[in-house]
Image 1 (cartoon, rainbow, N blue to C red):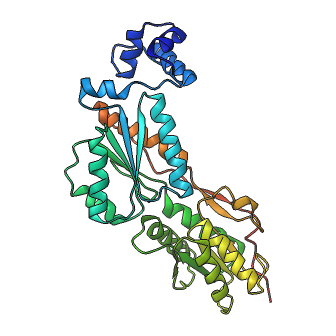
Image 2 (image 1 turned 180 degrees about the vertical axis):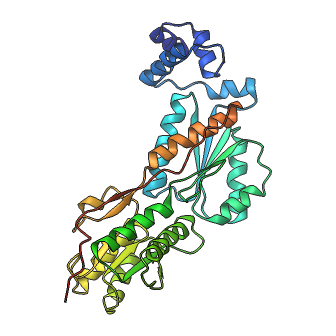
Image 3 (image 1 turned 45 degrees about the horizontal axis):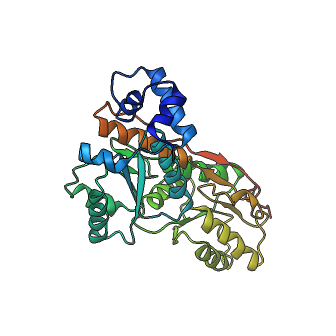
Length: 331
């Protein structure tokens, strides 16, 4: 494993300078700091966190608490959090929430605190998680990385409402007037934000609202919904609250004898890696999960170091029109 002296040699500085950079000493010139950070990245140097914890009573360790660790979006954000933290001399430890009960959240926080973490990034999809956290006496900084709209203060977000509005407006622009929303579960931040964007777009277009269908984010539910919806004749398009449900939905329509997009258009949300490769390629809304991870580290480290908090606005989503959406068939 590379040592601090290896980093110093590559950067052309003393090992004391490397130590000052790792501890974010204010006397280091920006160009010197960048040379050291570049050397750390090239050598994949990892500071001795245990030794540092003995001196500072707190390790250079960031905790990530995630309730959705296996899903594409959070997994992408966590990978970026680990990379951005490493460049800044921090390591990352991740705790998965098996449930979002107050007991499970408390146990996860206590586990991270026992590891003497310097701060916590919370990735959780449900409103109640943040209610519990606000009521806890957490003595380290924490930021919440969520993908809802209206990011303020310690919360980072992608503008889910705008993304859903774009998805629904895309269908309206194609000529669809009867659009169903396959929503996510109740109490999930993303589900409520995307439903709001859908309703906003219909209101802006002065179109009737069809009662949304509550799903569970899975392709299996989408497949079931597609088969059930195929029996109805009161819609020409569906906006699904995530790509997995949208992909299952297209499968269900196909099994029921409907062709996408000839008989019904489908739009998803998230732009998961497989979305361009299903048939037909899925029209969806792209959101930048890695950038959310980078912002989380920047915001948390500012809190840890007592620096001015960077101001971030919501990340703007991007509408990606592919072959699963088209103008409604006439006649």
